Image (cartoon, rainbow, N blue to C red):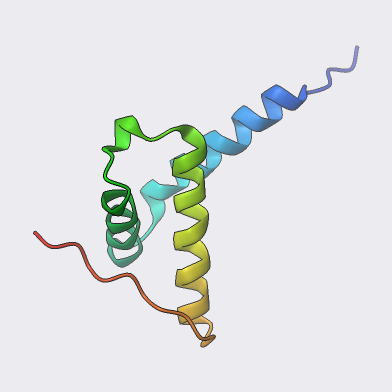
Length: 80
């Protein structure tokens, strides 16, 4: 019997990978994501999964542009 993953199962797999991958980022990347979250005015728990994924994508795109030498602006570090 062949098991086919459903679209919902695939989506859950994708989102768990994206959110779990935050743990493996460097501190600079992580601080930039924290700043993006803070700019929403919401706590992490108040964000929807879609909102968090959107912020992750935005941070990844900005970070990649900066370190690939493409025009982009870096998120300022979080103020402690």
